[in-house]
Length: 240
Length: 116
Image 1 (tube, each protein chain N blue to C red):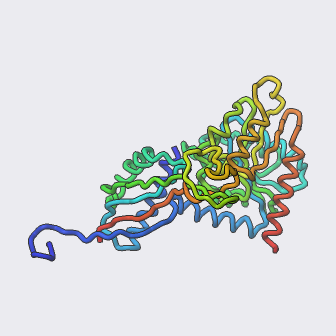
Image 2 (image 1 turned 120 degrees about the horizontal axis):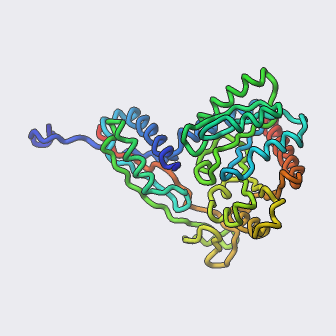
Image 3 (image 1 turned 90 degrees about the horizontal axis):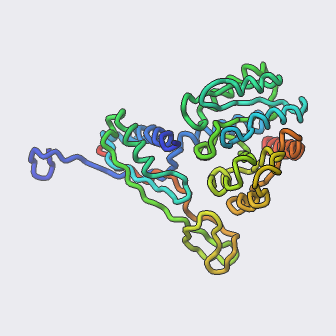
């Protein structure tokens, strides 16, 4: 009933509530909780994003080889279907949990939380140094979702072409490291490494760039050094 | 594609906001979306219109989008300027690339109009 004249007209009270918070708040809150958990355990978490087929899993295989048991690793493998990637990692003696999204084109923090606890069961109390999260192959959507990682790494392979940084600016802007993979193919493609580096740095002046080849092993040492220095920084953050 | 996930997250937030404010119905959701957010606003509206139907409290809610332009402040000469250049913005006064983003990456819920 209208409270001005008492007529039967239904007048509802409306009010506007000021919110001013991120649309992605629920994911961001879960990401902060993940990061806090990793900090407490002294784990450096790395989120790998790239197009399908850029070499994320291969880079992980080479990383496992290069570290040769020197650091304790765990891997969360994101894919739409199958646990083929987790099998590749487990075949090298590293604990891995496959996260299948069943259609979603990116990982979200809540799934990382569940995946990490599943990984802990495989660890049997063993301490982890590095947690790799291999995102679903996609250069667009994963860049929107903080997973609680400390470092985001974007991979672009030589056959994909040199225009990728400009076409996928958010992936570059939100990453701390760009790895150019499959550099052994450079003689066969018109891929100007310096142009890619310049474009990436224009989008994100603080991004680092490493050029790797899993075939020749080029750049892997530099990547391992990057991981070790970031782990040292992470441990300092844990114990100031 | 990520707009569907964003819309689903938005539904969760709206349910929480409605509960906290004892709202009976959500009428209008006003968003602030920056030019560099990477969110396709038409896709987000489309996704929200699909997912809202499962929730009676917001099944007739409308989205209003306030687009936020890309504004930088120059670290060298402090000039604040708007630009459409999303790749290589340079200061309009002194041409420096040493810039700080003031706005353009927003992806926020600004306010919600509810019936109480």
